[in-house]
Image (cartoon, rainbow, N blue to C red; front, side, top):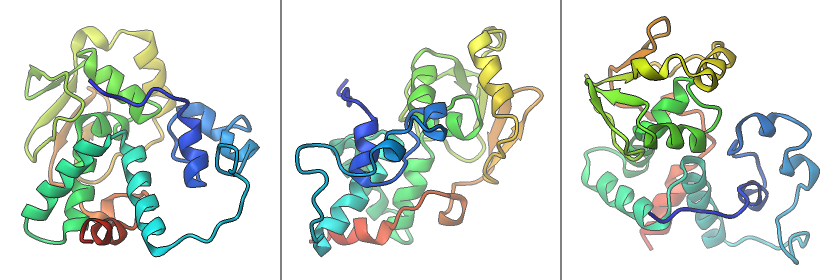
Length: 208
């Protein structure tokens, strides 16, 4: 399976803002964006005027990097979004937000989406009682996501869940914090997503 293997802090620096790809580190002075607030590479400190196309491309790249999705998969999500009723851009964000690894992150089982993706791949979660180890699995209303009983005693997971106890899950997820069980009550909408993504720029990019 193809995946990005370079330093993820370079991605944040390229977008000029924190994408919160490394969990705890992103909240400290060690964050690369704090230490070097310019793009990586030999010409990173140059101030170049960004074209309309450049703005659209950067918005697409930012969305991909937030959710840890590569180009071909992102194109597939856009095609799926364009076939659904409603606004294509909002449909795209809803699809990305419905990924199982993102749900695990939103529920506070991981400090980053990358960490959540690893937990899913290692088979720590079930959907409707069935083990699902595919991070890109798209959850649907009515489905129940549960941390496996054998995983509840793992110190790593317990410490992260405790550290994230303050985090409020989005309203489209009904979360039983005591039993570590969540039910999908609706598909996520634009209002449920707190990421600074201008989805209309992505639509404009693919419409060219």
